[in-house]
Length: 84
Image 1 (tube, helix red, strand yellow):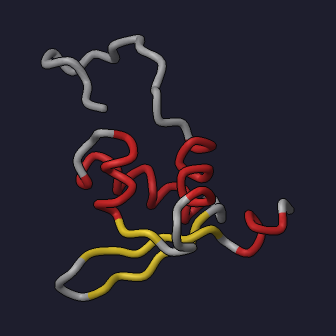
Image 2 (cartoon, rainbow, N blue to C red):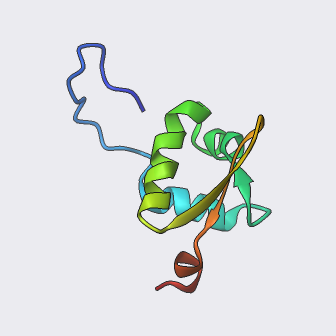
């Protein structure tokens, strides 16, 4: 989700909150997903979603791995899986 052209916050509620991202990964057909898969789930570009995914890694909710030349893979952290 991008900001309005003037750079001011839009005041809109972010339709892609962290819990929705986590639940999309939990509900995916495989336990590991790529950025393109998740972007398709939320109808955004992969580039728009990556900062959110990285923040979830920093928060300990997701894990990731870069596949050189291909992109990133994302999965739930063990703590998130166990509900800790």
